[in-house]
Amino acid sequence: GQQLNQSPQSMFIQEGEDVSMNCTSSSIFNTWLWYKQDPGEGPVLLIALYKAGELTSNGRLTAQFGITRKDSFLNISASIPSDVGIYFCAGIPNNAGNMLTFGGGTRLMVKP
Amino acid sequence: DAGVIQSPRHEVTEMGQEVTLRCKPISGHNSLFWYRQTMMRGLELLIYFNNNVPIDDSGMPEDRFSAKMPNASFSTLKIQPSEPRDSAVYFCASSFGVNEQFFGPGTRLTVL
Image (cartoon, rainbow over all chains, first blue to last red; front, side):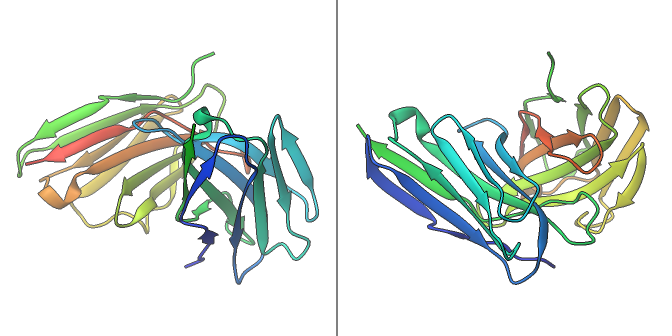
């Protein structure tokens, strides 16, 4: 099946720092989504991207749909303690209807 | 504005018992997804319904797992008989068409 490689697997940063994580695939994706999961909860959608090259912001979050359609990144600016959690990229491969493929997640830990 | 509703939130049962997980998708959504999340395997898609019809069940682990969607507002995932290796968090998600999926809070299943 389709594989999404998400990196880094975990990050431990200082409050106030910017964060960057990305997902790559060997196949073309039509849609990229970024989710955040807090402990004991389901993933919550942060940003959705539908067009190659699209750059979208949601508060301190910015995500881009790679021009090759094989990658996406998520940036968090000026991190705060509540940014702690696991961030997942997810994508809908070409010809996959609306079935999502998930990356392995990036665990973000912020030092206050 | 109600999101995806799942019940129960926690289930502890003994090996061999039948387990039924329930999901109410967001009103108006026509696609429903069941996922399983474990530390080892991450988020795995089990089955996907569109307009109440199962479209892809290739992720269902084995015959002990079954899912139904009798109407647009209700779905069940049943495990019979349950085994310890079924212990995981099970998520239901819904979407409208080929759009972003919204996840429920999950059911944490422990099979002793």
